[in-house]
Length: 334
Image (cartoon, rainbow, N blue to C red; front, side, top):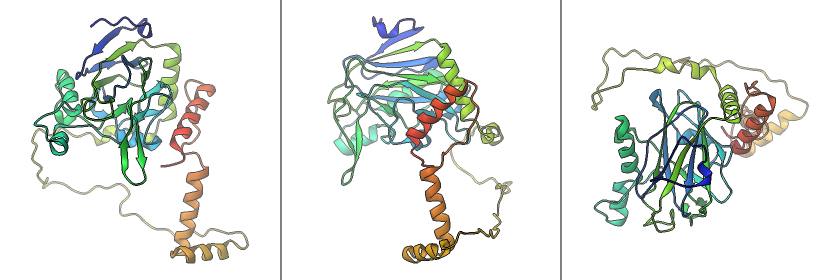
């Protein structure tokens, strides 16, 4: 379906996804995937893969290190051992919320909770979309839930709220690598508040790279680079064809740095600190050594940056912006 919308000027690809459809879209490094509301209030489930290696894909669990929802400036990371920036959120209005807890709806959930023989669901919609690339239902992973309002209630836990996204809202996801991006119209909207008790279309577009987007991609890949990412290829094994698991009789354990050695470390303390440590340890019911470790790590998580300074390719200004966005979302956690 042709979409006439000024938000997509210059896009190389534009289409409208009707309920309940999805699409697997190749988004090249530096390009922007724009996912837009049509009527407002429609939740979108989202999967993404490294286009060059489908075993490296978006990790909701590790992206959740930035919080249970992402805002503008948030980063979606790939799964370990890679843990690389896959996409970053270049635009997201305050009326549009995201969620990193809800995983994805599936047929068994609706059968068990609501008695449906089968109900539209994101597991099946994503599986159908990625079938175009010969991927299977087993390759579907937990979704980044876009335009989804949720919160943690002290008594009820994770709960839905009315979808606040307006017809003018859109999210911009800039690819930090060549990616296969899979947005789908969430299939649970007619039986939950996630899409305001209805199912509506969404528009998707792929916008070309800009100087700013490429600068930010280069800076992000430099800023989050680690030696562990470079070693990720060491973990590659032939992809199993058999589904049944069987012990490999030739297996020999090769854990890195195991068993761990323990070295006593003497730490000089200012006058009066040992007495304070002993008091805190006694109050907490732990040893003085454990108390010292606990206080040190607590201080580090609250006061220290979670990332060392790294010179970014995009220059100091971009580097500072990345650090500010990361630390604002990360809140000092690990």
